[in-house]
Image (cartoon, rainbow, N blue to C red; front, side, top):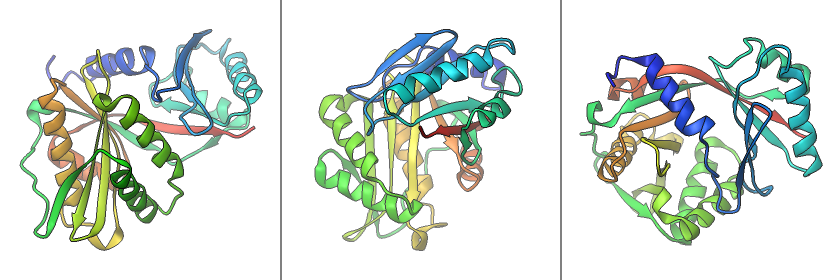
Length: 261
């Protein structure tokens, strides 16, 4: 597939990662019901709708059915809405039903063989693989400092993934001496051509020095070694220019809509 064939690449992404979704969490499951594909996990895992094929006549009923389902389980959940999803007013319908939109991000995909992967960490910084609880604590520590958010869910999820399914996750932390300054993970989706880049966060004093670029290149090389063809990222406005510079293509937007019972 030519890398310029954006509609075909987006269709492949939809088919393999959304319509054909697999559980994120070792204890999770994927359910297909009434034009919707959803992930159901524990309260610590990720719960939400990853794919929908709805028309204007059925959208509101489908939204109500998802609210009833997750509320019945006592779970908050996310409806992951993409810019090309139908009906065109699905976001407005979600807001009307009580969902709260989070900041919009850009879905970017890079064909690994065409990316610029020569980025190395800056002097004094080394990249270390994360394979045990000590490393997971470093990742969670960076996440809290970089994003200013509680990271207990990340600690639980990453520990569970590393113990139950280590072949599906690559986590890495950037160390300056004894200090963790950046961290990121990659989720490999067996049976697809895609690996996903997640959680690339750098503490404020180390931003702008090329650490994030080095983490992207490190994970891209690891994905290529495992036979994956594409990398997928939900990019913030801060990371989008860096990723474009490395050769990633913006394909559409993605917005998490959150529902709390």
